[in-house]
Each structure stands twice: as structure tokens, then as C-alpha cells.
Length: 149
Image (cartoon, rainbow, N blue to C red; front, side):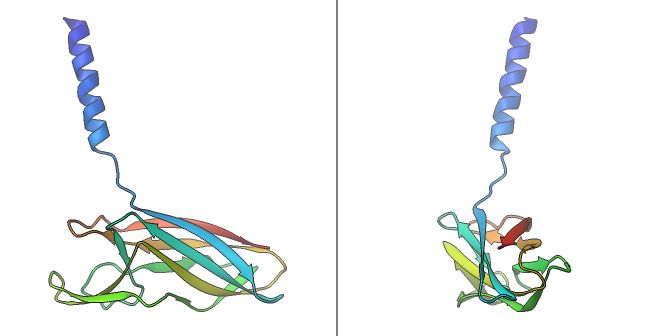
């Protein structure tokens, strides 16, 4: 009887654990390209699973969480200007009663950096919110380290 109870408990916890897995519909990849001896561009690419999207950096307050890039302070490099993004898809969202801009499938953000030495590692975080037509997941934050050679 104890063996059966133990087996049933194990099966129950396995099923609960499998159903509680966290969805991660966005994957990030990074690259850098030197454009001169003292400047480079870092590329931050988000790939979304089909049906999912992340929001632009340029959203007004009162809507979904916008994408935010934060770069760590370093004596090796300094960001130049703001992180750029391609043209987003914009629509009026009935839930937020405002226009929202988003990217589906794939998007590449770019940040120019001034290099204070020949090589550097650009570090920071990206905070973003991902949604599909049925749900939004809580905002997520991902750290990045991008070598510039």
C-alpha cells in the first residue's frame, strides 16, 4: 500500500511540475561590429515564437510595458545616443484605449558605442513584455554581454 501511495504521489508531482513550466517565447541573440577604431554598433536581436510579440521602446505611459535597454557603466565604452529600432506595427488597442507599437516574429535593435580601448564587452539588460492574442506574460529581464573586438 505504501508503494502505491508513493508512486501516485510521484506521478502527481511530475504532472504538476510539467504543467507549471514557464513559457519563454522570446530568445535574444547579440552581435557587434566596429565601424571605426573608436566606434562600434551592437545589435540586440529578439526572435519571437509565432503569434507572440514584444513592444516598442516608444510607448506612452498607461499601456503595456515597453522594451527598455540599460547599459552598464564602463570605462571601456560609452553608449552614444539612444537605442534605435526599426518601424514598428502600430494599432489601437481596445484594452489600453491607446495606440501601441509592437514587433512580431523578429526585431533587431541597434546601439552605437564609443570605444575607449581597442576591445570591450558591452554589458547590460533588456526588460520587455511579450504577448499574444490570448495573454501577456509578466515582464522579463535578460542580461547581455557583447564582446567588441
